Length: 424
Ligand code: NI
Image (cartoon, rainbow, N blue to C red; front, side):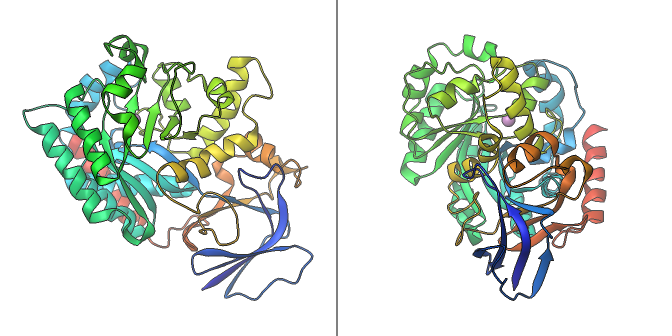
């Protein structure tokens, strides 16, 4: 089935200005982009934009724990370690595979409504998360969160993670799998070496929390540089470091296999600090954006992360040109897709995957918008409330309040039941 976006503005992280075009989507791909003055091709479905709709690449949430929507609101306004140890970990003990499945689906409703087409998830019972994503047709980069605990727990979790890769990596072009050691404070260095070795042997990336808090840096026992080297993480095919709030941009590291994942709202809410993003960008270091779990954000709204990123670093650096709007858009879209192994996604180009967000510009806060200033309007004036549709692989997964591939009522009911069960 072909869909024609007739007379829309297209914008992505590689364009400083938008283009007014007709765009044809066919067989899951962007088949044709034509100047608006040309005659548009025929299609089964036509979205008439009248120059008042924009199409952006779908957002990629590069770090989250989707099923943690079930834990939203627990232990508010507490420091990271106190929050994890007293409020989160005891409740997580009660999560069953079914609860995680329904929690993930409920998170997917939120993500699709706010324009996310792909999410990078670290949690457990990840085969159920993969089934949830595949069932809906949503893209996901998944890893089994690996933490120490009872004897043999790390080895069992690594085994599960490797099984997950064997079963799901590359499935339907929707899923990639990484290894997911949780953090330096939950995985001993010797185990990290084994995990890095497994990643190298299997050709898998690693998704890892690194230096979220000052305390974590103080307790690392060695320099971050030495830790990354000793643990073998510098040699894995790709390494995605979530947070990196306390990683010094002056560190002597090559960026060839490393991407940082900035989670500004979660870091602000937990009082962890602010990543020195401007210095990383000056180094041309790749940075993607994520929300982190809904229990520390508390939203799963990538538009908000994009806006916060663009505002926060201007303020911190007293520099109004720091993190231009279009750079924030690129970090929220293309960078996340690229670093989790998804190719030809995150930009609006002929031949690339049709993972798209349709934005309604026919609203008061878009008065004055044009091709030149659309990026700034989107990032500073807009919000995810402007989203009219979210498309993945050329199929609508969210359109005008409806979810064509998901049963919203059933998901909400099951997620409510899970929440009640784990908090009783
Ligand atoms: Ni996290």
